[in-house]
Image (cartoon, helix red, strand yellow):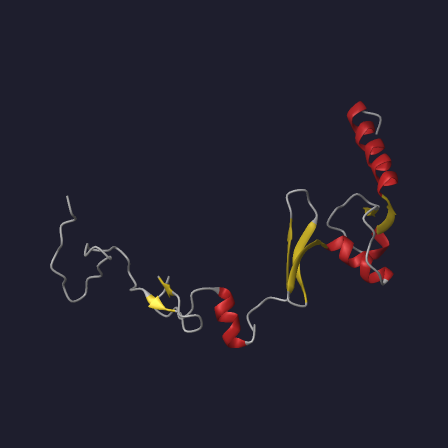
Amino acid sequence: MPPRLLPPSSNELLDSWGRRNNKKNADRKCEVCGTIFTPAHKSSRFCSRPCLWSTNGGQNKKPESWWINPRGYIEGRIWEGEIQLRVKKHRVIMEKFLGRELNRNEDVHHKNGIKWDNRIENLELISHDKHIVRTNKIRFSKIEGKD
């Protein structure tokens, strides 16, 4: 059975089959790419953030943003040229301090055990295998109650 068509009223939006539509804003054409999109707000002019950024030179593109991840480390997104990278802050701080990128087998250890304390005097560069041994000693001593 075909959908029942309703007579359009002056302020009603209809879908492509002529049914009443619950959308609050009529579909609109993006000013940059020409894509038809459903705006979230009456004032929306662009279909996506890249289209918005292309008109204002990326002025509202954040240079970096940071948060504390579920494991307690400060993690964030930074831009290197046109590429956005997800990084841990203690590794970025150590790379800036050393003036080079860290190797894959190098870890940055927090001396006092506080994962969000990223002062350079609290950070120590050690090999991955030594870091595992040190971390496991601490972990197993807590489990066995040897503190």
